Image 1 (cartoon, rainbow, N blue to C red):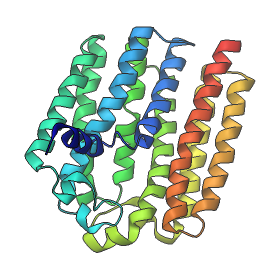
Image 2: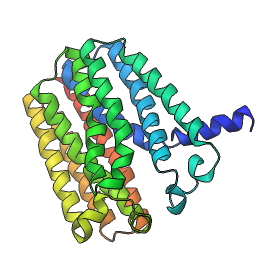
Image 3: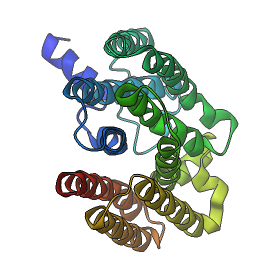
Image 4: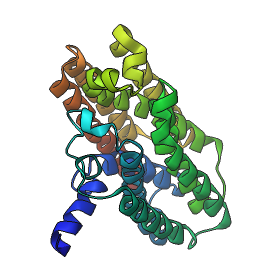
Length: 287
């Protein structure tokens, strides 16, 4: 395999060719930085977190595929992934993970000690998450913690503390993550049942749409509370209304529980996150 082909394998292994996960991780992280700073954050902190989000999402994808290497070949959506198809060895995948994780850790060493301590917890959570699908029907809830961990880290980097406001934002993103990752799990539900992968889509059963709506509502409430604590104005409120609109559209898409519309609903969450962040940024710029 030549260098170009090898790089292509690494890109697909780390899902760099599919940025949706990076974006879903980026929006709440950026919101946390803007909330913590009361507007535009420190440029150094911003750059480190943007790069860190990209790298850590890639790390998560690699360790996830390593954990699922013997199962992905039996799932329609994942059977062409590099580890499942045999394009890369398990050992090489682990080396890629370690290199990227060390690079991410070097980035946080440029920040304060509290961020460094939180980053250690973050990498441990990232490693544990893929294996939760073997032992619990609630891996999406564990993922919500992993996916929200950048929020206290962002506050710690910008302010040196993690105030109550940060945990309201953490709760909002946790609920939102459970909602959209359950939509994602609905795509694979039939295959997951066959190979023994557990998920909230399976756990919630025929009440999946209603429970997703409950998590969406809880996320909305927590986003509103975080905005009230930060004394945000009407522009942020417009982002909240946009979030509601996207949530209703997603409910429409998942109504029939068909694979393609459920995946479309999952992808639509990128626009919900982007709208909320842009509204927050503009709110701070104007007010």
